Amino acid sequence: MPTVLVLAEHADGALRPVTGELLTAARRVGTPAAVVVGAPGAAAALAGELAAAGAEKIFVAESPDADSYAVTPQVAALQAAVEAAGGAGEVAAVLLPNTVDGRDIAGRLAIRLDSGVIADAVDLDESVVATLSVFGGSYVVTSQVTQGIPVITVRAGAVTAEPVAGAGEQVPVQFTVDPATATTVTAVHTEPAGDRPDLAAAQTVVSGGRGVGSADKFSVVEQLADALGAAVGASRAAVDSGYYPHQFQVGQTGTTVSPQLYIALGISGAIQHRAGMQTSKSIVAVNKDPDAPIFEIADFGVVGDLFDVAPQLTQEVSSRKG
Image (cartoon, rainbow, N blue to C red; front, side, top):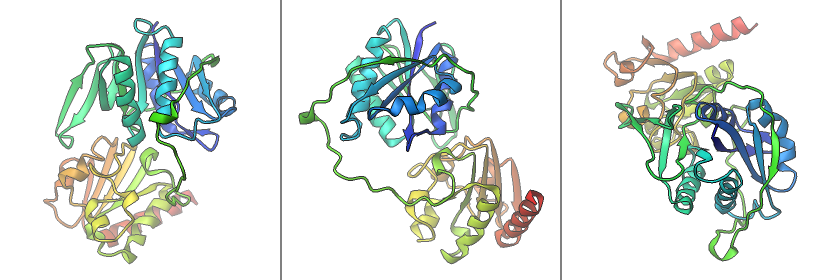
């Protein structure tokens, strides 16, 4: 079977959940292989997790300078991994997470491989035909790269990870970065995330909208999220009103999420918000307006005051957890 390369997303010595999702998607097409880019020792720390997630091979692309440049090391490492895996004819596709960096890497890599890019896929079949949710989730379309090795970014949470143990054979690859054409990283400033799950990768998300009313009242959203072990999100209207920090915005101009459960509190369901969460597996909406657009895509809807409904739900979840 042809090889499908997956860029392994990792931080602080641990894999991010999207990597397992990408390896599952890769298995539908061919033999999944992970590409680890990082400082020396990064692959050794991740090898067990990657094998358990389904990686038959692990291409080890390590360099002391791997973290010194923005995205260029990943581009060069993926290109080297494609060559090590046999190039066109032996490599069926390259999969990356649909993040800001992932899309940047994908575009640069496609130019080097003289191939095409598909961004923000929500599914992938054995013929390397990608499914996309477009125009705010109003339409579902399929796309296929017709030249070279397809480079595809996949939306986090869109594919359910199904781990199948792989051999995890480690294959070293060499890559170089030209400092003259690379962007040097001079400092890294991490946005505070607290103890809650990462929004983009969370299996459960509780979001608040303009209906929450103020920053102080956003605690009703946080309390339900904490009871469920969920990430907290916010609509653009809530963020623009100063109710919650911008890094938690869900939507077309914020973070795209696809959790198992999405709870929308006081969110009307504007098209740009729906574009960022419509592929969630189950959607629960609470809104006082029975005609709110969010109810058009909700699996379960409650017409009512979120300040009556959410605390009751928080209390019920907490009591069942003991």
